[in-house]
Amino acid sequence: MSLNNKSVLIAGGAGYIGQVLTRQLSSQGWHVTVLDSFIHGRDLHSALSVVPGVEIIEGDIRDLDVVSKALKNKEALVILAALVGEKACDISPHETFDVNYLAPIKLLKQASVQGVSRIIFTSTDSCYGAREGEKLDEESSLAPLSTYAKLKAQVEEEFLQQSRHLPQIITILRLATVYGLSERIRFDLAVNLLVREAVLKKRAVIFSGLQWRPLVAVSDVARAFGLVLEAKAELVRSQVFNVGSNRQNVTFNTIGEILKNLVPEASIETVAADPDLRDYFVKFDKIASVLGFEALTEIPGGMRAVKEALENGFPADPYARQWSNTP
Image (cartoon, rainbow, N blue to C red; front, top):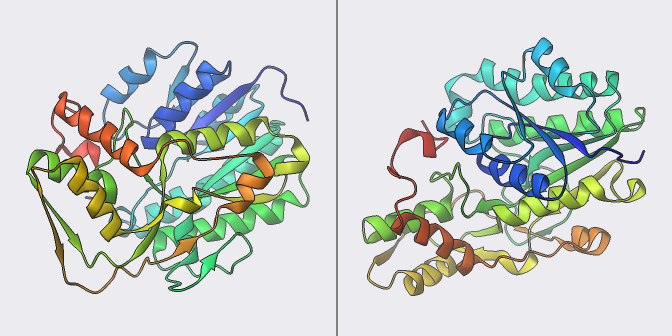
């Protein structure tokens, strides 16, 4: 299945990752259609409308008619759309199940009916759960703790089962914890949150600091999607890839030290607490060896970009509800 006209639908393309990915793919000659409900603000629609050649469809991924229209004549589908974060998912378990499980399954079915060649499902490294002392790769067993991660793992299983029977090239990307600057920046993500507090309040608090977390810049996540979309079919068909960088497996104490250097005038405090249960160390050798992926943004650089944006007045109100998925 070769990609002839490089047409892609990004479901959830107005979100944190989607804003960066849309711009990247557009600059690489892709015809991008964004399907999004714009629940985080109409200004996100305006931010995308200036990107050359991007079509925007406002709608819900659960609406079959909207999905059918959006998928017409598309060669690729990227599924980013989801209710993200434990607290957001806990508000309405029924809606969470509809959006995070049923909707991706229906998207896969409709994409298959319409002959879409490539499909990427966005998952999370938190599917591995709390695995202190282990170095986890794509063959490691999954032990998700949160509703969000459990549903991601279930969709992964369904997609991989279907990939044995469908002609589509289906790939799963398990993302490390993302940080960095986007037109729809999220300040409920740990690194971005710490930078905001240090810059604006001159005080940031780290709880425990001992827990490990794999990190990856949002710009590098977008690059990984691009690599998968254009890779040879035999390299990515029915494959799972962890997306991140081995050298960006760090403790929060390390993040605190980086923050002290970045914002020396701020007080960076570490408070004794039980470590976050999401304590894990993930290996990213597969995506490096198979696709040649390497993270280009290091943690200090990604944090600096957020710092400079805040100092330059973006976003205008960093504490506004739209910059967080946490209720």
